Length: 86
Image (cartoon, rainbow, N blue to C red; front, side):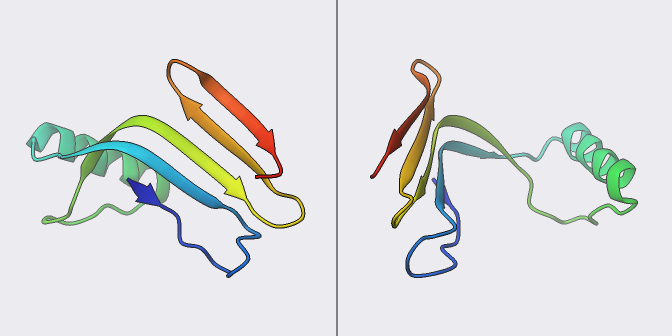
């Protein structure tokens, strides 16, 4: 699970969670393609060694707390759902 950093104690900016499985990418051709993609976008590339992971996303959720509370959830089989007043 990946979890966003909560920036205030009230959760006004939201809370995001991504559920899935991460796999370490060691294949040299995958790593080189990643470096080339980064270089083409920002004219910089990471130098070896660096960490590179592929994430297989299984579900995701986002929630805002407080007076304007709502939530969003996504799963492949159910699609995106929204609810108010968590």
